[in-house]
Image (cartoon, rainbow, N blue to C red; front, top):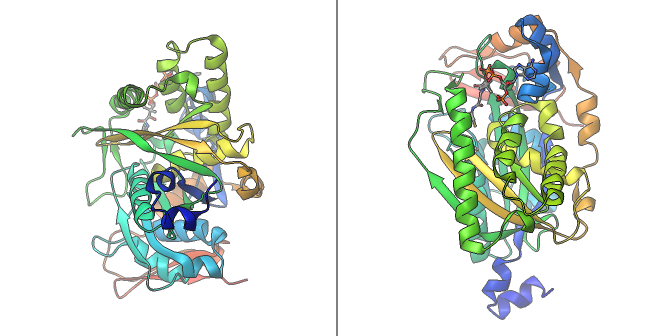
Length: 406
Ligand code: COA
């Protein structure tokens, strides 16, 4: 492989563009979770509806001392060292849980993480699609500035409301990534397929912290968007199901991805290809099953889950489907880089195992304890939060963050 500088000097842009992608990836969620069978019993549902029908085993319970900014900081901190803090030149923050109508969450993040002041940053919003929009922007930015290192984060708290149909599909957390040339995890192919349609399947008016959702309509649109963008991609590139080692999905709940995958498997050239894609999909939903919906971060948690299973080999092609209600969808692809396993944090599964379960009553109390959109001062429960970064509260209408240093 040609070295980066040589490519730039020789103005070999095509080779450079084919060698941009994900160099580092990390994940953070709450130290608390709600077992889905407990929630099912409390809601007088058969536990198998949640465990199998929806495909969720546990749901992250986010403390009132975490918001999109702190979730992102807790995820990104894990992949930063001093050199990286100085190298990052762009921060792209995908979220639909923004903390200010004006100021970008990327600026709070830059400050909390001590990233150099010459880096620029913006917040990107299109429901769960925001982080994927960031991937495409980072691709273009790195192609123009080949030495660039871009920090991308997707951070959200998925709240639907107590005793609503969406309740078993709640969750929260953040995924952070560094994108660069010569990536060590996944090279991203420049071709992709998009679809945008103005529909009301899921939205959140400015006065609400809980989503309004027409869940069955949204699930159908998700499948239609996937089929449409996958066909569009196949028509552009000539690639079909047999070209992919895995197809992974935005996972608002893990059954959603399975339904979308099954909707195209009839076109698989043989049973072995279909079975291979189903097996890799199982790998890709393990972490999401334990955490619930992350909104913008969900597709990338699924990517991490797939990579962690270590079932992929160098050169394997992965198809990624991103969906943000409202709605925008994109299908794009990446190629697994040799030695990707060495770049993965081996402590993710252990972190999840160390979480503490809460009862349904405790979950409801935490849910109701969040700071409302209000002018008055507020203090969160940050002293009980073991996370490195936490929201202390609000003073004089300004958010107060704290960092617990080692
Ligand atoms: N054992 C196994 N499966 C069971 C079951 C049982 N005892 N009882 C029900 N199920 C299955 C149903 O057959 C159904 O499966 P299917 O979708 O494959 O048909 C699934 O469980 C869900 O049941 P359903 O009756 O459709 O649940 P619901 O009306 O409560 O709604 C959602 C489920 C997912 C639509 C709802 O939770 C929701 O709206 N969530 C938010 C969705 C979202 O995030 N949208 C944004 C998309 S990006």
